[in-house]
Length: 293
Ligand code: NAD
Image (tube, rainbow, N blue to C red; front, top):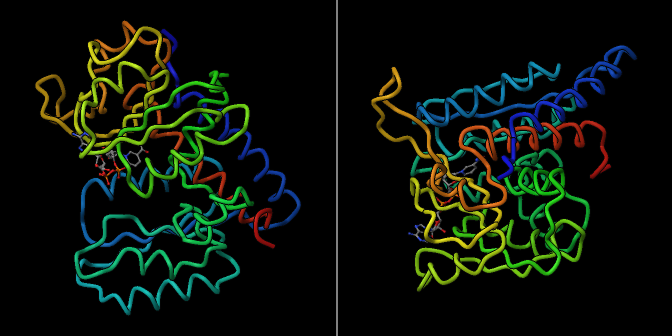
């Protein structure tokens, strides 16, 4: 079994980005700048945003976290987003999801300039992705594609089952994995909560991507020998083996599945760090005006 080590791959990519940033700085230019908007006090959101800020600092990016109380109005939030959209010193803007119930996420995403949408959620970026045009790819699918490419995983003619059809992971990944390119040339099945006989699908799949958010859902008996397992899930479960009383697990029963599969991502240390590094890559692309002039 080969561990798809997102932690070490993301470190290598970060070193490459840092070297580029150092070169810009030596030439007297400002570094790339990522802004994250964090609303309310959701502990998971706070953890994700601080991990992104820490990664920015490691590679020499400027990073700003703007915090608003849960009570912020939708119109005030949109005004603040517009100020960032027109600020030439800022290259990327992310608004950490989920949002409070009175704020419409799709409206917020539409109001982020697509040129600074380094999460790759804006309809223009999603549309360009569909049409294979230059765009900011959604960060988690982009990170998964990088893992597959770096570990030289065969995709041509392979069957890929993706479980979970969210707009940020499963749905865009189903498009990317079915492209006529070397590392994404699969026949894709997109499964979800209404899919029947899921076990029949998991047993046939060469590559399985788990993105449903149910702890340890995929077990040894559900897969065939030598399949490739990508675990997107991040679930906090009670544990008597940690000081905090909690531990993070994926959607895969790692200990049993690792004995049967050919490749597997751990949780933590698999897809998570690749998501963050994809955000950094997109911010660098925005800074360099590579995608949109
Ligand atoms: P979501 O929570 O928006 O939707 C879950 C999807 O799973 C839905 O499409 C639903 O139909 C499907 N589903 C739920 N129960 C199912 C079942 N029993 N059988 C089949 N399908 C089922 O999805 P999301 O936002 O993509 O998040 C999924 C998981 O991935 C969560 O654990 C989340 O924390 C994690 N996540 C991780 C990263 C990362 O960087 N590693 C990024 C995004 C999300």
